[in-house]
Length: 220
Image (cartoon, rainbow, N blue to C red; front, side, top):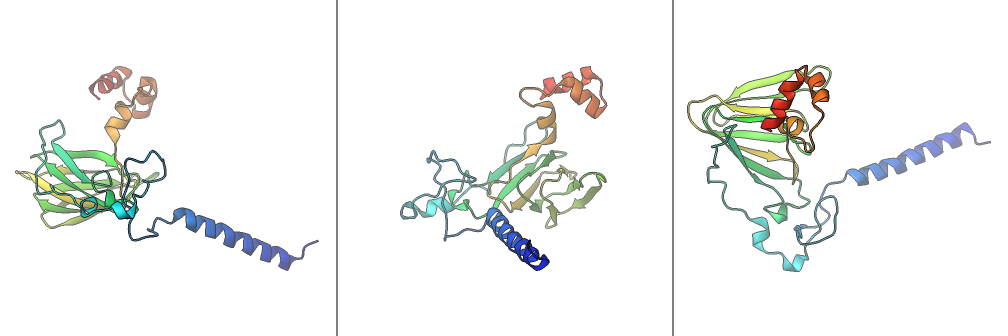
């Protein structure tokens, strides 16, 4: 029968091995100078396959156009210009990206989440009300007003929004700690799912009349 000391040694050893595997699984740091994305590769991985370093050029690390205002003539009055690995292959494995967002007067960036990244946002022009909601069970609404030069942070995965409360246009620039932060717009995901989520489910979840749910689904 194994002694208590033997059991402790076995337990510590097992924990050390598990920790090693967990550390490897969570390691997102690059293991080489760069891993420029090869978007033509048919291989599917968590990220994108590396291009042959000998074929890498300066164009793989370059993007031009964030000085150009986006077209905000849409229902919400805002538009995002993201700079992710899809546009800059050299971002692959570097865990960074950014986005310019333009707002028409009274425009909003509707409630949404970024499932794979936290966000740090700077107001370049205008005046915005921003906020995010903490998780269950508190659902605390953290909100403030930002002016030009102000910075605000949105934690990963939490529902957040921005609203232009100034008289003119507004512009923000935000950075993410992911090459592909993702975006889930709450209204689109709930009422615009394809195929639809059952109207009965949504009616009970949102405490709405079923016909109201059907109307909302029709809009999205």
